[in-house]
Length: 127
Image (cartoon, rainbow, N blue to C red):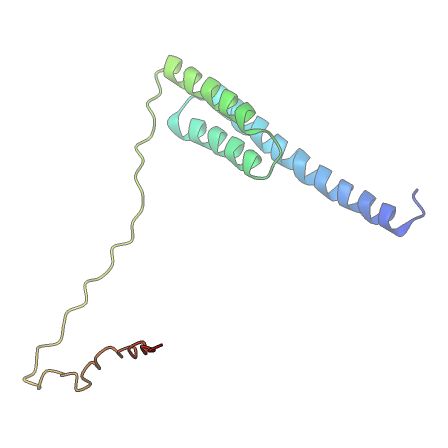
């Protein structure tokens, strides 16, 4: 057991990080097993998503995830699984109806632009 305060803190942080990392790795393995058991578009997407999350959190390297995702895609293709259509849910914005135009005087800008200030001419000196 460490005696120094910074070492105690470091040990606590290590334990928390390890638990988090183990959990993420278990999620990846579970998603891969689910895809292997039942190859479908949604299980493939879930497995690839878990790999992306692990990369984002720095748990695995980018190329490792790319290699594993390629293997999942290859298995999906061999199983005849077609990728799910990328249907993005876009919330339809309600179109606001404009109020009927009243016959109000159009706004006019009364402030006229000032002409640019001229620089004073350079003085000529006679010698």
